[in-house]
Image 1: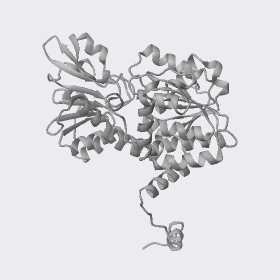
Image 2 (image 1 turned 180 degrees about the horizontal axis):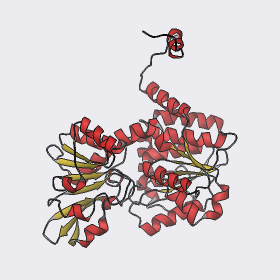
Image 3 (image 1 turned 60 degrees about the vertical axis):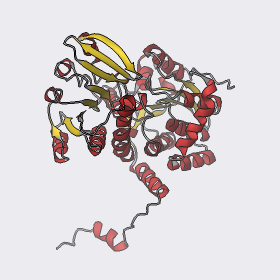
Image 4 (image 1 turned 120 degrees about the vertical axis):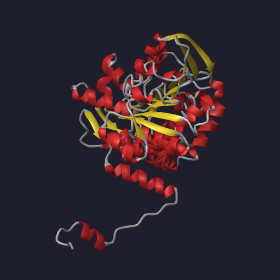
Length: 421
């Protein structure tokens, strides 16, 4: 048994958790290469790193790479329903990493776990939604002076952090890992596109072909969900507030409607906006009985569950991760995973091969923060293009894909201005 301070569901799950971590590692060759280099070079020797992340088998491979580089790690969950308890057990019992995460924990426990993680006095933070950072800046400011930098994984988190920076509230530099091309182009589009539908299917076992799926938001996550739903034979409606994204959705072949109109047509609704109350009381009033509501955005506020509760005469769990809300007029609206991230709550999250790139960016961004001289100032910083290019090249090499190289003549032409027709 490990003596590592932690709060997990059951340490006896460690053996199976270790098997799952190794299974994910088979699809994470980029992180494996980074792990090997970190083990040799020890860039984080003695450095305290705290991560508020989804505690999954893929995240475990990031944690082990950072630990191999000399870091002292403490982890907590970034969503009350996303923890894989066996993976948490393996990290504690087999790797000696402090973990505070239990699948299904209450909001009170969730924030208690964040505070326990901050008790480890982190020098680097790795966040997924910015709850760790915001707690540091509000309730635990006494530890801010020790923090040299951090990374943020999600669109929602980057939005929060840019708002903090604009208000002059952000006290240390944070790398916007989400905005790296090898993160949001692939993780958000291909990862969310597949895993959100995976969560819906696992929770309901519903056939998507022939259904009308309403995708709220046409950012990279929305694009991915719409594309995969279309590929499975669904009729896709997109709702948007941005005219350029709405135009893109139309050009991609989807109908674009206001949510007030789409609400009456949808069989399944998937929110991917990062904003609050995208599906609200007026929309519930127009939905057909049996409509399924799922969220693929970070927080559980995209669907206004309080407003739904107000019009519901009865709420009951039909099966794990499926709750039925019976309205006063006799309709039944089905909410998946309490409105939390459906892909991580009702399924296993993104495929490991996608997270390989996202977590490679995380690992290299942490190294960049540590090595940059002079240190970066407070604010939200982009991941350097060199890191993005490095991750892409490593991923392509692992897939056996080769690139062309520009000739000297081509390089000269691209840098000239005096050649034309």
